[in-house]
Image (cartoon, rainbow, N blue to C red; front, side, top):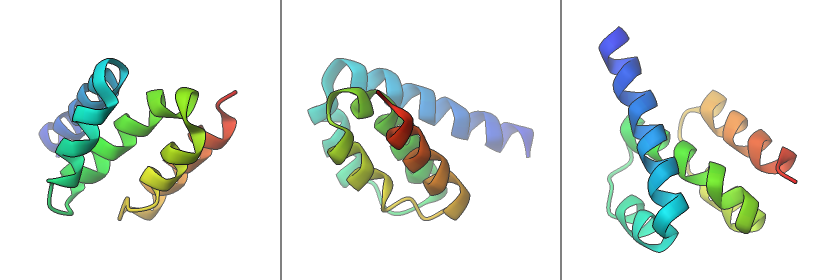
Length: 82
């Protein structure tokens, strides 16, 4: 279980970093991913830097996260981003 959690957190961090550099390429990668836990965590990371530049887009991106708790946390972060 720890390995899986570490991979998921790593996926979030990787997509946060990727979105900070090139959110278009990161979003294309997400579009091509099949729905999965891995994709949920990737989107979770992606919305964090996006929220500062385009909160509406970040809110829309958070919507497809299948895990309800993760989706709520991502949406909350977007809403709290100044």
